[in-house]
Length: 318
Length: 255
View 1 (cartoon, chains in turn purple, yellow):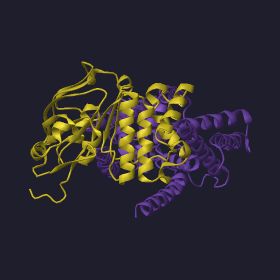
View 2 (cartoon, one colour; view 1 turned 30 degrees about the vertical axis):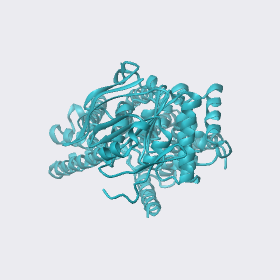
View 3 (tube, one colour; view 1 turned 180 degrees about the horizontal axis):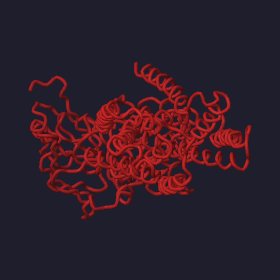
View 4 (cartoon, chains in turn orange, red; view 1 turned 135 degrees about the horizontal axis):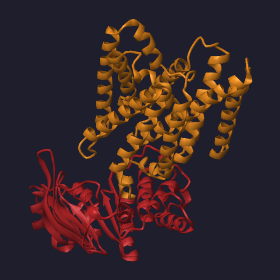
């Protein structure tokens, strides 16, 4: 078996190759026009990829479940409903659509608030087990989803067209200004996230062992859930929801590294995530010639992988 | 010294522990005994801060444990619960190293590694330190968890039914190790036990609970007798003395 540091280097090299290919392969038109655009997209993919990887691994550690991701908590649905309400109530010409800043700000704040309020009300660790919280999140997600469908059915078809574009992940039209704000928020979150890597290791032992070893467990769970909400909210508001990405990269990282150390798992998951996004986007551009989108590819592969994981899991318990 | 003052806990309408006040003697093994559902594990969980008490307080050297810092507390009191299933795959050494977390915060130094070595040696695990936990037998696994608690180097060690699912040989082995911890290293051990004879042979003091209430608290000799045990278990338990040990022969008892 290879050592984990070797594996990390291999992944880094692959990620680097993907990034170089994406940045330089087959540049047409003016280099000075195309190159900065490509760098911007690359930057967006790195931010989104690492944010989703960290958020998912940390989330799965505190929920002790490797098949759940923060989108199960209804965060993606919250993004859908915020966008739909804006289009439904104010129309596509409103300032909340036109101004990317406002739209970004409103979406992020709504998603994080939603998560915080949900946890505040539901999260009483000694009263409700965590699966109840997740169940509540799923039900609220479904409720929001139905509301979204309801509004989309009676909305003006032209508005609906433009709304649709917002609801699918896309790296093609990322705005530079938002990129820097997102990078700022994600870096701040990572600064805190780095400090708690060892705490995550201890928390993966379970509540009782973690408390025994001096972790203020219930407070830390709440903090980590909020941290992952912020990371997912920012990446969703930046490029749109990529539901299955977190699930794929976290589980591939667990399988590939087989370690408990979050310093390795999270860096590994981030690299895999960047490879998936940049490599996937490269395929979309140069192999599929834009006939499909990255979120379709990732959700297709991710869906298959999810079914595989479920089957594997059920065979283990049988 | 650990002092429990008027501790109570209810789950829904059911009161599991009711107004328990007692002092835990330092440098001794204290066993919690009692019928199923007497509240032994709940009481231990409250002492170790795994559960918040509804009323009452736990004092560690006169200070309220709720007001103590989590990491300061974890350097003084260690708890091991009975269900020790882990979601992560660890080697024995990795698990035992986690016991150093309160001191090392994840970065083991030379001193931490020495403590880990000693804790492994103490439970005869040195040879299998690089094995994964899921490759071990029940007894070896239990020893690995106890070794983690020893690496934590606390004055107080609380154990919730550590003999569960262990055969006689391993049970004796573990009780002997606990005795050594108290006699050689001066630790204080509090243990929830189901087997009354292990409690009788190895503990210095016994605390008996029934329906959430404290019914007996005293030196082992004063509690292991038919009269006191009837109060706790509602059955006749003959006690015989064998090689200086008081053994309860209840297997064929009529009421």
